[in-house]
Length: 504
Image 1 (cartoon, rainbow, N blue to C red):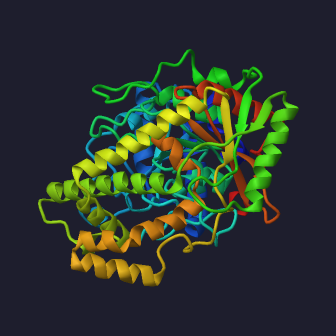
Image 2 (cartoon, helix red, strand yellow):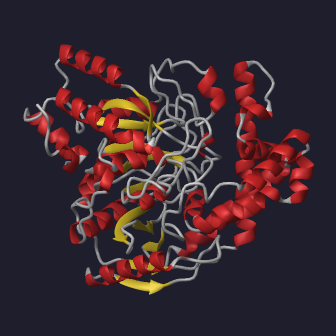
Image 3 (cartoon, rainbow, N blue to C red):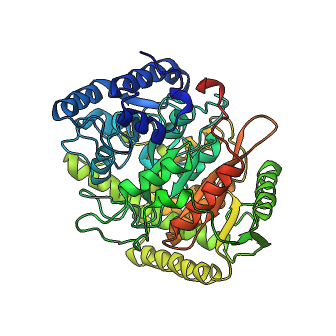
């Protein structure tokens, strides 16, 4: 029997109806399959469907009598094809080399194990840029993912496949990772709720330690705040040997969503810290959010944060390049062959070459600079409870506009062929391209560096009908306040009823 209101129900509601016996998990799988098969061709969000594997898992649960257990019992979900290992599926990382060479994973990562424990059924994996390096999702290996609000535009990145699938109502929930805004960016572009948790809150084991020197963390993209909170309850907590423990939570995060927060001191900033300008639509979104906050009884004051653009960008790029070099070398060791530029996108290979150009002392100096920025921002957060900014500096741009131009690709290809990291560094080609990216994401990477929780909330749509998210940032370890505030905003200005054309 088809489920007529599948598109309108969040994961929590679907799980409730499965547990009550109103829905059967097989109905939900059929609904997800029908929508993915019908809507995905226009979006290219799901790159590894796994319906048969989900059906086998459901059969095992039926045999054990557990198919109606868990907060997301029987709910179809998607997993971003980066970092997380799903037993029986390969992890391509957006890489053509790994797509050609890697076989299926032999076990689940800890995060995926915990996701399955909620009763969710994994129905596939979603598109991501190579190694999750860009705020758009246009890998050469799988092709671009498109925004369901306007298929000529980007859904953001690097969790763009997950965001597009959730916004298009293929599934109510998909996982994502955030190393420079990669949950918050696509949440803003696709009209979703996206929370980046505190550093160390979600496990990265058993195969990985810190992700991107501690800047990256996994969680999910959802249409409702309560789904995000319930997912965080399921995922949160140290796993064996975790390098970074997050501060303990006081109670389940899902309980925070219905709790009205105390009167909050909200700092407001629209200055484009890492960029140069902010689109009027994004400023208007923040101003409207500030007006709503005041109507709800909160205090909102302008603040100025001391974030030096050039030193931050240089330090962040240094650490990122070192991590990419490490990844390339590890893959070469795993495949037992020498790394070669033909196996990687030109920008990825060039970033890896840059990683070879930096000394260990330079990488540590960059990390130290960013850690001291975190110290400084921590002191500033003592004067307010929550920070409000735009999530992005512009509405979602057209596909192909954020990446390297054809001329830049040719330049990177030549420099890569020369295999001269010192020349690449001397010419400054990558920092120039990074500046274009930071102009689009001048806010989000800062809080990957500090490790603070931050969320994009879909409170605004512009005159063209494109979603414009606003970002709220909390103190380290304080997801509770953010979820209380998000729940209050969701009740005051509901957004879930808004659907893109490809979600109907």
